[in-house]
Image (tube, rainbow, N blue to C red; front, side, top):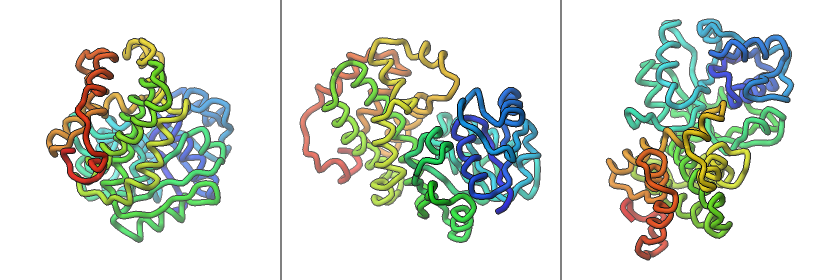
Length: 337
């Protein structure tokens, strides 16, 4: 896997391109935005999505999807709701695409599909792995240490991806639990919005800690109902990513929640941002999936109600605080608790 194609020119795609370049790979990054392509090729910087981070001069950007697809491995780093469409476009560029690593975190809103399911539907037969974990793009691009989960049902593919991307500062840990890795990466964004709302509303660190703990219980129940393994949810792509996203101002979902807690309108906050806040579009898909599986997720439901059903922040908080008392054993013992 000497040639790596990165599909997506946002902050995370650019960061993963730097990881591949740092590992000695030949990297071509595809971006739809012409200014991103020009900035990377001309200034060796993604001034739009990752300003201030110098990029390897050997890294090349293109707006030609077929050019990026001429690789030994593709990293799919598009917004979650666009992943299936991009996978379909890739499938039209070649009858023999290389293996792909899904690096988007979310659940498809229209279908409730996990990202690997959405990509597999759009490009049948495509060898797939999934990468997720507690990472901020700027830190990864700067070469600071990070560890991620790399999920693949094909052990040989998984090992090859680790060899292609792994290094002293970027450490992939292998698993075959694709479901667990993806549920963790999707649900944590919604819980992070709730944690941000608590801080923005002035409810304090105690409330945020409670949201993280009870949000982890919701994540665990949904993952178990989908067939994930408990150790995956307790690992990097579950608990690790949840804690990071719920506690740092680098998190788009957490800071979005803070803005809501302070009384800002969701649409106004989103309109002022370049990058996607994945928890906003994943929330309704997660709530629908949970309902289908008979899983109770009150925190995710409250976030969904605020974002998509016109509920006020105060009403959502009041509803959570008015819930009946119950045993904490419900964190991982039974879908409906």
